[in-house]
Length: 73
Image (cartoon, rainbow, N blue to C red; front, side, top):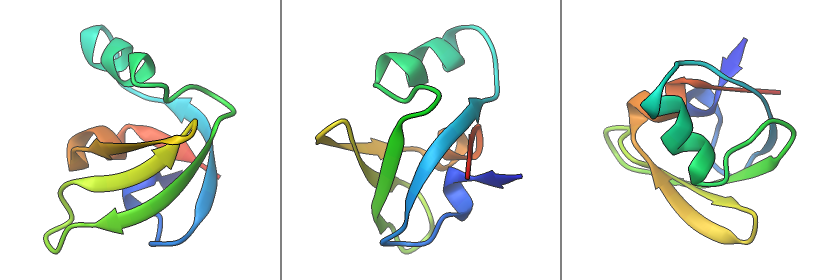
């Protein structure tokens, strides 16, 4: 299992599953991160938080904790 947090800069990956439950999972999905969507990792801050990605044509910054909940391939 690979998470979005482990993805290298410049890689494009596909979302397989979003872990977590309740309002946290709902918030991630409301930002456009859903199963089957492609995510391009643009930048990662020096300490790994946040992760900046391009998804559905817009840029999004995710906290490290949120990026760990997103399983990709």
